[in-house]
Image (cartoon, rainbow, N blue to C red):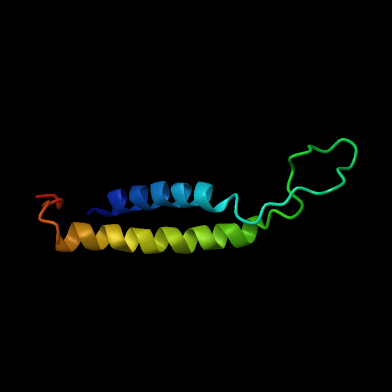
Length: 80
């Protein structure tokens, strides 16, 4: 796997993990202030979720990298 392919795979994995992590712990407030959306979360904790997403994407990327480099499934995914 080349470095550009590795970066692109990581970006795709990061966004997939982001959309999976984003709804975790979302709570809608009981009383919504005037002018606010009724579906807006109380405390979205986006920085914590971004860190968790980065860690999940890194682990998934390491698994993909291992599959490509060591080829345990016999798929021969490396470039010639």
